[in-house]
Image (cartoon, rainbow, N blue to C red; front, side, top):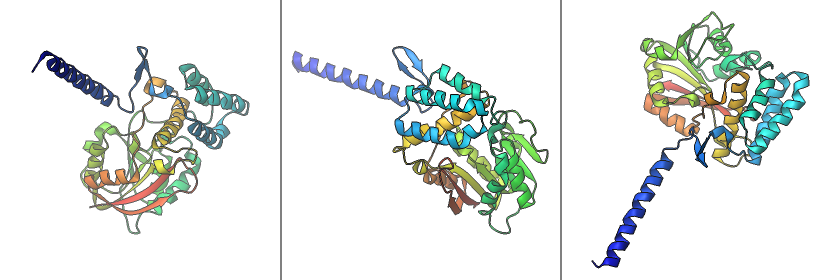
Length: 309
């Protein structure tokens, strides 16, 4: 091989190595990571928000959040939200939004914020998917402020236990046994006849492990009802899965601000399609027995019921 051929071979090898390093670096940037511009880490929540997502977030806020603000705060909140979405939100934007949200009726409600007045409706939606004759005890994976857990347990006439992360919210129902997520493994095998996971699975860092543990504590023939987001059912202004993820993340951000969380605590949720959740549940030992869609936006959600094999 003469000198020019050797040089060309060396250059090609270098290019291949550089490309491999770049691919590895890109692969290491997950959906919850920051990315770097000009040497400065930029958090995911500062990403630009496409017009369709802006419109959908503002529409959701008008329906679900603005009515719970003080009357004098509503116009100012709308302006701050519009400006934050247009420019890619800064910490100053989030602090301005939080000022209004912290003194709203959303503040201090725990993960189930806003659900208390609709607990009976939610419970009925769940009960409609539970086959006649199903019996407890009942386990709720992620119970928030406990209002829906209590309503379901009363409707079923069974004792309720919930698995949760974080401190116990004020006014949490005494009728519900609350177990820290770190003590999930202490629950007895084949203990529960009914389980629910209501808008909680997308918060899991390791859903396969948690679902396997859920399958352990639900007895054979037991029923699991889940409610989750469906990216394909988000508002029509949103035309891509990434736009749907951003829409849902922004809704989570607004409620997190109402709870007093700082931006460092924001975590991108791990959304999956119904088919992907069904595949994970199948690996854990659950088979589908029924599903139901919700009318309207309702945050792009659906219910599905599974039986423990």
